[in-house]
Image (cartoon, rainbow, N blue to C red; front, side, top):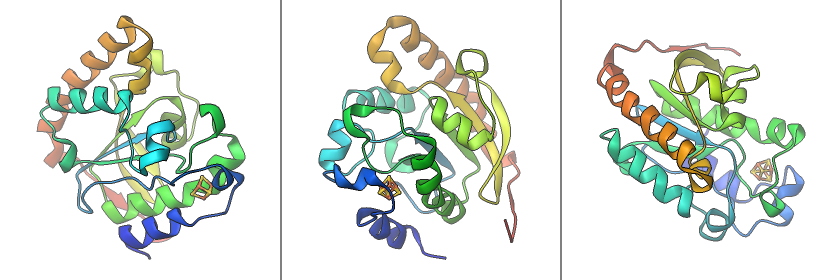
Length: 198
Ligand code: SF4
């Protein structure tokens, strides 16, 4: 299987779905190959598309603050998205686009082998849980997950962009990441499993 760098090169030149037609830069994601924690959002926005980097706009600044509040530095986690190219006008990705792009995320997860994945928003929570998720009910909870042949823990939260639209969402995100601090202290006790075939 390709390593993270090879996957990033494939993503940057990918033409598998129509989203490649309007992108400025694809956004493979970034972070260490051996990160214990991955954060997965929805799709690149305007600033991410311009720079080819995940979570670099206002929502990115919020994410950096949230990570710091949980005792984490951006450099020590892998940050990526379900979809690697920006949907026009930031529309929701389609089921077809998610299906077409998902092998990249699966391979990234199998390369990194995280102990914990933090889903940011409903698209990531749904894809990684393989079921519909009501974020307002399940945020701040730790679940077991299996995706692409990798089993680990999943922590569900809101997309940081939600905090741009109201104090209520910001408060919920801050509380989730506060709880994450305790979760992270147990990281070494989390069990992971890899299926050889999936
Ligand atoms: S969104 Fe994914 S599948 Fe579509 S062109 Fe970009 S990298 Fe390829």
